[in-house]
Length: 184
Image 1 (cartoon, rainbow, N blue to C red):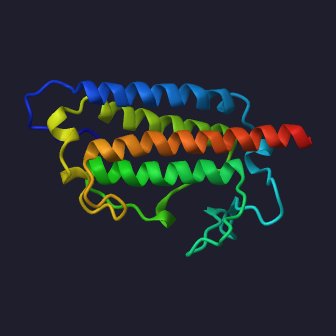
Image 2 (cartoon, rainbow, N blue to C red):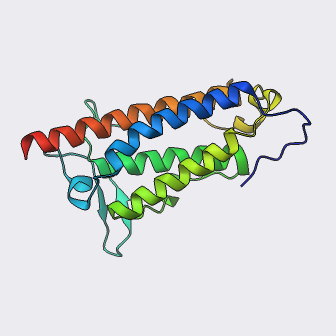
Image 3 (tube, rainbow, N blue to C red):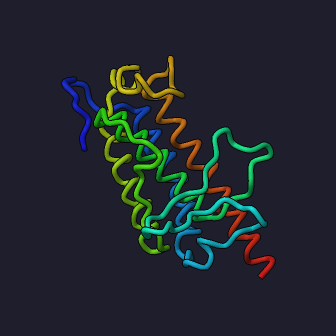
């Protein structure tokens, strides 16, 4: 998927900054992805934790509730990884392919090695789009129009949110991984 750009402008310095931030966040993520195995992926830090489970047909389905309970349940690394894949896929496809993706449409790979490859692929797709964006494209609301949570935002705002959300999720995975090691 590529950005449909008719601009003759060169890639934006802000776009390169967003890519640099993404690369830094991702390097921290790799610290946790290297040792990720199925046991760590599906470990539940507390009773009632949200996870990703196979249904009767073998499809991986995330725990989900609308509205979200208060307080929100703890989550497994699998659930956080699914969540990253969901919002990244939905945001990428909306912004760069004009395709809407529903939560139930996300095909989660199910095993640590496949999940890591999936997330790396999503990062590569997103990065490839960011690196070529012009200032004109970053300042446009056109590619984010219709994202229910992005009303009034520009593409640069959504791209910055993607970096921030990824950093938050990486932190959650780090805490969960350290907690698992601490309790054995």
